[in-house]
Length: 485
Ligand code: NDP
Image 1 (cartoon, rainbow, N blue to C red):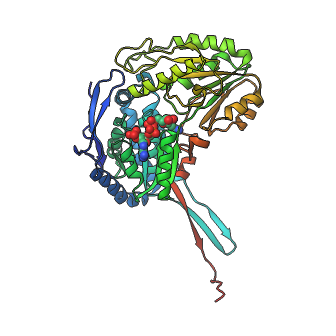
Image 2 (image 1 turned 135 degrees about the vertical axis):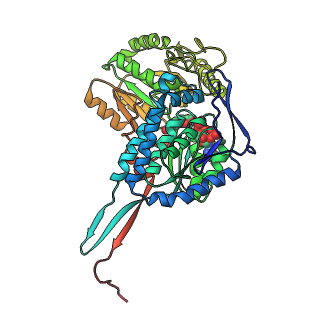
Image 3 (image 1 turned 180 degrees about the vertical axis):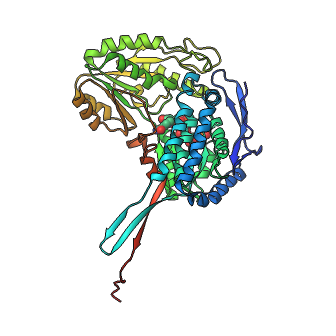
């Protein structure tokens, strides 16, 4: 199996190679075989990417927003036409099942391109009357934006960041995770095919050091990172040194609260979606599932039954529902969490091993722990694998306090048939993205992001516009100048 791109980087409207950069081997997580060999960006590649972005940006910003939107809409149409090939590439890059990548990854990216294509021309300023004088405001581009992507939704992340950036007249230099470098390159080529002028969306490969060099460059006006909290802290600090704008989409340990009166089937289904989709490698997962005592026994029984029926295997097999983790290191990390949870006294309800997996890949079976207490590592730390922790609770007051007792605040969910309680509880939960009787749905129309250590800023929705533009305010003097001198 091969998925070798034409070159490692895409800069100034063309594929670019520099073999002097350290080699990055891209592995298919389904088997561990090498599917592509790329090179990290050298200082020359980084310079070319930033210089071309800076050069192209002003002219792009001077276009009418509807003209910028037209390019994004064309790119979205190309993505949809090539849906099957792109889904396959995403599966090779990430190891996620083809049944997911067909409906979730690139399609969600195309949604973002369509949404911001339509939104761009609607962005207007204010006029502020001041008697005879007035002030008007304009939303202007920031300049060159830097996108740093995680490996779990590589193409979706590239689209979610580039679409609002480009719609608002910015250029973007994007660095994917070195584990999943292929989708963003495809996106860059598609943008050019759709008519995006060279330099406006450049992709450079590399590990953290390449990201670090980009963040430190004075031409960068904004940094948008999707990644872990420790990386977020480092990148935020580096961005602060240059007073750059930031969006930080970081990790979570989100609560999913199930009250006794919830629909059992829906709550179990949502808990599974919120822990096992993409083999659990989703930042907003509801990995602390609080179940009220009256429902606990039935919830766990049904969950064990449904979780055991999940089909693991070759991600390219259409019937497979769960693939491997993205890398051997990630699988090792997740297995370590499972071992320590057992040692701490959490009760293993199902999973725990690599059952049902084919050899060679980095599989972990869907795993559920019950009788988890708040102090256990499995209830505090982000696992980023298919591991659910079920905790019991008795009262609303108690569960709200326990749900909020976390450094993270990315997402939260509540299942109950009592609507008043649902809104009351959601209002008190410290999380940026919440669901009532649903979980992990992230349509582009809705702002997405976290509070507390889970991040700063929002992607998607109208809110994203504010994070890829700034307000210029213009005072218009219409009378004589009143000067005391
Ligand atoms: P990392 O934090 O390790 O990396 C994120 C990106 O930042 C990668 O491209 C990485 O490059 C790059 N990077 C690392 N160090 C630096 C640095 N010093 N300067 C600039 N760039 C740097 O995250 P993962 O890729 O491991 O992704 C998993 C994490 O992402 C999870 O914790 C998850 O919660 C979070 N996440 C958050 C989401 C959200 O929207 N809130 C969504 C999805 C994931 P490289 O990998 O090449 O080192």
